[in-house]
Structures are given as structure tokens and as C-alpha cells.
Length: 365
Ligand code: GGG
Image 1 (cartoon, rainbow, N blue to C red):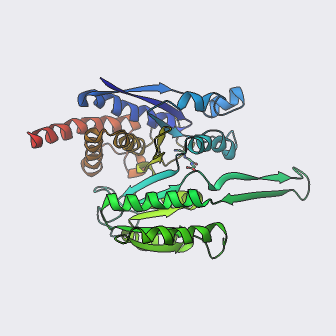
Image 2 (cartoon, rainbow, N blue to C red):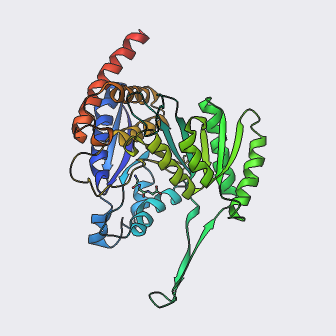
Image 3 (cartoon, rainbow, N blue to C red):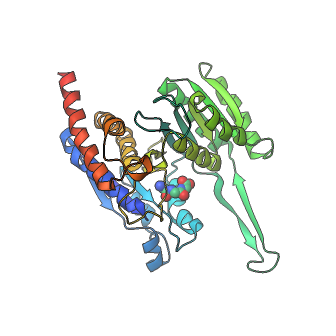
């Protein structure tokens, strides 16, 4: 039987709770679709850091590199500075494994209320494609006169033509495949950041010429943030630098109802290293350990992982079950106005998966 070896890194806080549930969904369904999902658990994150002084061992990347995919929860803990948790785990995995495309879809599902008034289901349907290996997250810089009066810190954003072109091309290819509004919006701040982001604008114009069927738009990040709230329906694929993609994808998650619904995929398109799938949300220390986190973002991240692995039948089934759960389900977590626990929400989703599967079976007979 075909077996996928998945490296699971639950990480910190609610990451642990939602990855448990995502694995429960994947394990309980894969066999019915003729394959096995085998999860190897890596207990890396803040607890590991507090014991060993690093977020993951030196051998970590070597241990992960042969996995078929990585399934990550979240990193972040109030006991450790956020730059240590992010820079010690998330960034090295994304950068070393050349997961240069961070794909963050947002869809307003029926049954979910947008904080924007009058938005109908399906009207907000967009994907942020975030450059994931360079830009503002390049970790280039330093601090001098540390802890002295007049300390200086320099942080440099790095934009390479190769890195910029490949992410922009990825966005155009995605807009073509999605076949929806057939539009790519580029987000920069090139009026103020006149080197790296001016290069980005030039490359965007060049690549756009190769896709005459795709409509294009270039927005400064401040205007983009405003328009994502004023007219989110107008967006299809957005392409942005590491930092701007992170910020705008939190807005797309918020206007489609909850960060608890937003999945993401860190893709290495060449597949020479594993890709990584994670909820957009972080470790949420305020609700960690209470068992009330929304499992949907992690389950949808698992669904994106199945799609990437080519298991599209089960991926479709999970997507439909989530849509049905959001529309008709009664076990909703607090972020969606309910009082269900993480496990109760997952139980309901697993029940609906059976119904969706039976329906799909009868319609294909
Ligand atoms: N789910 C992954 C996670 O922990 N996200 C929190 C976070 O701060 N991420 C920053 C980033 O995606 O760059």
C-alpha cells in the first residue's frame, strides 16, 4: 500500500492541539482511499529550546529532508523571544528546503460571518502568494555597541532577481490554474523602498507580458490593506514579499471570518526537498491548553498537503466536509461564536466526512 512519510512538528501552544486533530482526520480517512499516512513526531519547539538551548537539534534538517511532507503546528511562547522561536525553526526549514512559495488561500464559506457587513458566501475568494525565502526575513544585518548607549541595529531586506522572478511566475501560473478572476495583484512599497521593491515592480511587469490573458494590478501595501477591507471581492491572486505577504494574509483570513480557518502551504515546486503545511495562525498562548482552538485551519492545511501529494480525491472530500461543517455544523469553536472544544469540532467534521464520501460514491456509480 502506498505510504506517505510525514514529519509532524506540532511545536508550541495550540499548534500541538490542532495538529493532533489534523492527524486524526488524515489517519482515519487515508486507508479508505487506499493509502497510508505515517507520521513521525518531532518534539521540537520551545520546550526543546528550554532543555537544549536550540529550537531543534543540529541534525534536524537532515532528519526532515527525506520526508514526503512536513506538517507543522505553530511556534511561539511568551518565555522565549519570538525572533528566537521563528528564527530557530520556521525560517531555517522554509529557507533550507527552498519552500519559496507560501500559499495562503482565503474563502468566505457559507455559514461563516465576515466582519465586513453584507458579504455573501463565496464572494471573497483569493490567495496570497508570499515570497518565503528572502526579502525582509533574510536575517541579514547585525547589532553593534550591544547593550551600550547608542546601540545600532541594521536589518537589510534582500531581493534577488531570481527569487523575485520565481515567486511572481508562481503567482501567474496559479492564477492561470485557478481560472477564476484571472488576475494577479502585486503588492510593494516601491515609492519608499526604491531599490528592492523597484526591482520587484520591474520584474512583475516583465513576467506579466508572458501572461497576456491575466489581468494585472500593482498596489502599494498601504492601499492594498485598505482595499482588502473595502473591496476584497476584487482580488484573485496576490503576490507579495515575505513581510507584506504575512501581513496581507492575516487581513484575508480576518475578512473571511477567522484566523482559525486559514491554512497555508510552504511549497518547494521542484520537490527536491519536502514542502511544509501549517495553519496560518500561531501558538495563541492565551488559549493554549484549554482545548478550544479551532482545528479547521490545521485540517485544511492537511487537505492542502493531500492535494500536493496528488491525493486529490480525499483532499476534495475533506474540503467538502469542512464546507458542510461550516454551513450546517453545530459544534463550532469560540472564534466562530460557538462553545465546542477542538475535539468536538473535529468529531463533527469526521462524521461529515463519512456523509460526504457516501454521497460522492453514489454520484460516481
Ligand atoms: N503556524 C505557524 C506559526 O507559528 N505561525 C506564527 C508566525 O508568527 N509565523 C510567522 C510567519 O509565518 O512568518
